[in-house]
Image 1 (cartoon, helix red, strand yellow):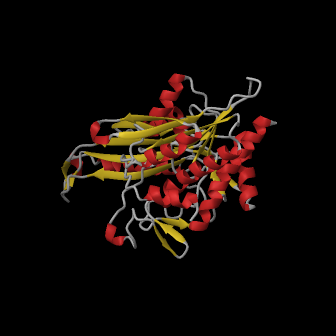
Image 2 (cartoon, rainbow, N blue to C red):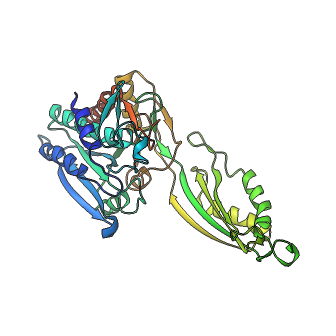
Image 3 (cartoon, rainbow, N blue to C red):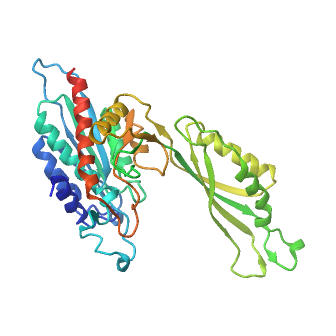
Length: 391
């Protein structure tokens, strides 16, 4: 059994459902400290939802002449996992690492305890080979990525910003691959913005519609128009911005009552071609055009970010090609991740991880043959950045 697989199993064995870290970060810190990492636990949140965060950093070795160019690369991720769902539907206990047909089963196998183990072992191998590297290495881990994400990475990033800590590169270990480790990475993500629209009417008896005002009927033409709007055309890296309704709540529960209001939940996933304010303004103009009496509350969950091809993307692509022979695909598809917070303090952020076909599902698993290549990709990225500094 490889050291990466062994550590992956050790982490899967910890039932770290958000926000409980269940000791995962202690295990990782214990591996990093002997390598020269200074490890700091940053806790946040109320006692009823206490989040554990780890910030660990290995300073660069002093150069022989006292002067050395140095850069900081951070491995970022989360130790928390989503709930298991019905235990009787699992083929094996979700927090007991189990092997079947060349696959490793367990909650967090893909999202993202394998990536965490690969981070650690890649760093151990790299430091053993280059103990005096000018490359600084950091770890930013949280137990609040799968939850509200209010006391996790965002808190650590703000603390680092206040300290003036400069991050040059960051690799987030989200499961980004499709069929095989390395076939796709994320060099950006769309922004997310949600709205809660309340359209007001007048409640009344359904047999006397002239004495009432049905808000569902009133909202329907505006919704029909919103569905057809082209918010932008996207660009070379992002698909066009999308607008989707997620929930419609209306009615009193009785079949003979016209409701007094209807609540519509919706979400924008937007590219760098649009801004939250611009989307808000355009949507509200359509509502007003249709003469609706409404209230609207907005929540911006994250802004879009993009890392253009450059030092980090090139180092990652070269590492994947050397390890697997794959020319990886750059993508910005999918949901949000904590990379949206890190991108505010780090100019180059890329997500690289194992296949994501079973994440959040019953019987989450991945092919064991995907594990060592992932570790080697991370190590090769470190080697590529080290060689750049040493040149």
